[in-house]
Length: 145
Figure: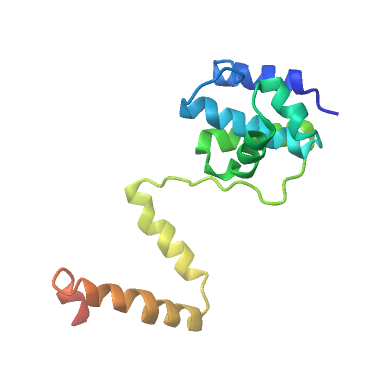
């Protein structure tokens, strides 16, 4: 079983601050969310989790249920802790990969090549054509082709 004190110390080290202090700094709040969610996944009670970081049980529940709002670097750390402690989370946190401008077109082309012809036709009819119509002055030379 995961030791909550050890988990808190690990998170404090990653955070660079004590997550049990009262703070409204976003970074610290996000690490509290990670602590609460890991604690819940490890089957600790809301009171046990809250006692370690000095928050009440409704706040533990709130942090645990809103883990999905944390930034990508926090999601990576959360996923590392899941792996470290062998915990399962049925809804893995998706990380938004930021693409460089020059790779966005290649990325889009790659996605489009994976679509079936009927899905591609639907995409063009429901997304591309309405987009071009909305922006007709900007792209009027494309509509004529």
